[in-house]
Image (cartoon, rainbow, N blue to C red; front, side, top):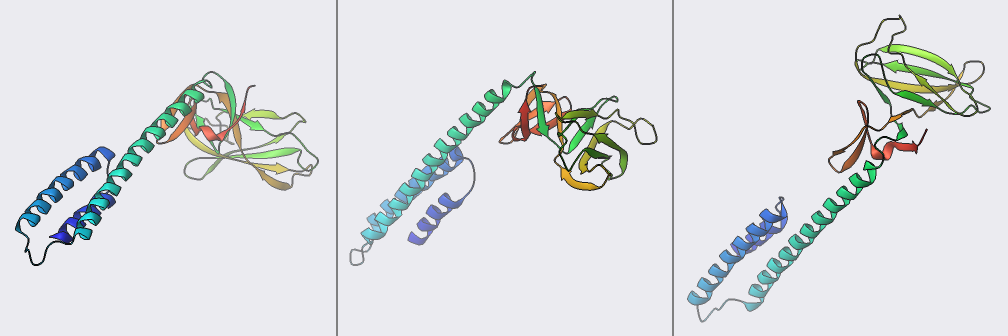
Length: 224
């Protein structure tokens, strides 16, 4: 019987689930344990009584599990408060012009987000922008000169053949080129736009720039 009780204690500590369910399960196991303990003490062999150390050990296990459940409950409360705080902080970005790192563009009705370009330097004076669809086919490529203060480029939603591309999500890559057109380095792509709403996905706050949704930690700059 004592091994069954120990198994119940172990199961209570290791089983996953919500803290409320774990608390209910623990309470049920304690009640069962006390009933079994009382019955065992009432009917034990006087010449071979129950080891008090074993009884104390089992009670200690229940106490430790109960403490862990309480800790988990408090941690869940703190995490919930932190999520709310992150959402409230991010809410101040609604209506703001921002720049975020993104390897995607969302095309809707021929309009998309502007691609933020870096400043020119001694090694890189222009960039090659390649836009591919979800099938991995390149639909548009453009070589754009850079200026000293940074600039932006907006895809007009047309393919290299001049046809209107279908609405959807497109991947974008940016390669830095020297004055002779040779590739020097890849550049982290970034888009700029107005934050239209704040969303939550799991534990993450998400920024929506129209149809483009990115994690809040992709934020690179606020302001025009």
